[in-house]
Length: 416
Ligand SMILES: Cc1ncc(COP(=O)(O)O)c(C=O)c1O
Image (tube, rainbow, N blue to C red; front, side, top):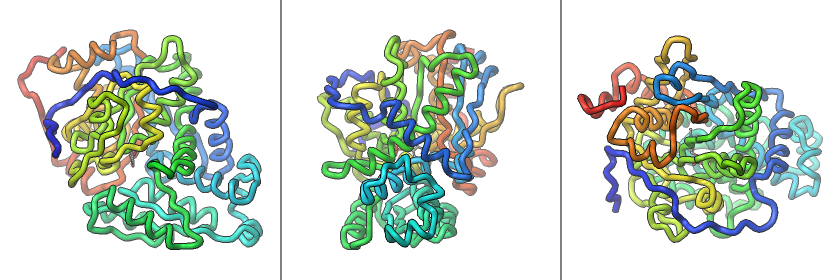
């Protein structure tokens, strides 16, 4: 049963015993560069913007604030395609014995290559973004996609996946049940491969490649911050559903920058706070959240942590937080109506929660303890990722036009 207060922030400092890492780290710069090189071979590739929000940084009392805007990724409105596409390439590489460096877009999308290697059906469960990325990649690379979505998934998201030629449907199951169902379907198909964006015991290759694929956004942001003359981030706030993205980002930055290491805070939806609960449990074992996992943050509505993501996060994260839905709505509105001189960012429910969270802990006195625990001050160089744009226009309008989850803590003491 979920005993969390869903309207409040729930925060825990990470005191989980560290895990010893053997061999090359999953998110080593070498592995991430391999993914970046692959993505660069796509004609649709361009570096997504890194916005500098100087006005807001000053307003909140931070040194600087950068937002990596993934709404621009391959025209798909979310970062997710980075994972599915790279995992497909790595799968084909393993199957053929050809190094992934010799399998750029041009080769993989050629008819000749497909005729030689054959066609695979890539199976996946999704709230929308991952499935769209898988469907898009399969479509571009001449493969097939079988996508199923949990109950409550937005019709627009389903339509976007179908438009890419995938066999896609919404099922009356929650996300984790949907993953198990699709996995069974994949096992029964001799040409089927499960491309899921989370790992479990015995299923780690594909999610490892997916996390490395996400690494493209980290290496881009890293380079963009350096180009801004800003050095690396002292603080990173990263949202999590299963924690593959958070593990990917944390793994890359914690591996590359050790002295001082960036302070990384994972932000989940309260109703699906499996990583927060795992950190709260404190012995390194993961905790699953069951039930409906109701939240407007569809991409974060996952109850079972990604095991390999967790292994990185327990070592690299400074804290784990659960955020209420109103923080996501607040984040969307802050992004959409910026301070003078700051750029406007279009950020959907799962994309915007770290903005709402950062704003809240910097502004409301009740969250001062989190600001202190994370050592945030006017020297902090903060990086957050807007992981999706407007992927559910109906919900987006409810938030922005109609004020869904409006004003909170009215009249309460604020910093300003
Ligand atoms: C927009 C968006 N942001 C963040 C996430 C969280 O990623 P993960 O499930 O790897 O934690 C998702 C997952 O689907 C997503 O769609």
